[in-house]
Length: 286
Image 1 (cartoon, rainbow, N blue to C red):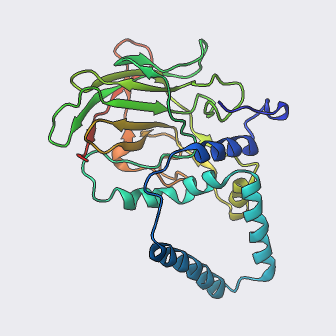
Image 2 (cartoon, one colour):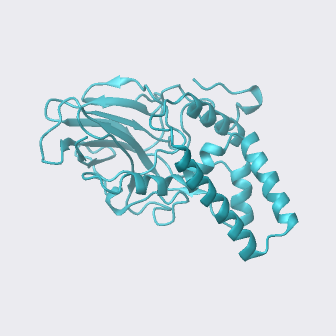
């Protein structure tokens, strides 16, 4: 569980959330990370050559070079490398990694994932505070294979921001597993998850990433979204995000992670409370 200093208790600072993301990434098991010497040579050489080309084409000055060095040092001190890479780079890695997959579309994981969230039954309510703000949402569907076969016992891992745009374990004052859980589908792959609709949010702007956004005249907003990892035995795991039709910044997400197939259109719930939406997941065979 992330801990915050006394000075960080009143707000989710870039340093606090950045350092939490860095620590979480350091603990994450990564498979397939090793590359051959030839592969490292090729990728590193082309990256460096691309930087050289930018410097030459744009006549980069020493003052600009020194500003870049200072910013690179600051992004490390703020613990914001996971944030920077996940916001501006990951969407292209995801696109390339999954270009040959069948089934449902994936998108970026983002920097705020925490593994081992509480396991929940087929119909479940995500852990939340008794007075949790926000519009109630019933998110339901079925997990199948690409041939239409239901996948019993599939797991649907969900996490998302609260109505103020904050994630548990990355902002102070939130219970450890707030709005995080892993639902186990029934013998037909069906699931029902009760939660609240998340809010759009700005990525932290008081650190190095915020300095870049301000200097470039960009906005810092991500549209409201649900994060999911959907898995079943013998199938490729899907990591994705689902957005809300008509929501702010769906068309200009700073992370460029929105795909048309990932936009939900909730309708008023049949219970008369909040909204509901059905979304089915189709997993490709491993």
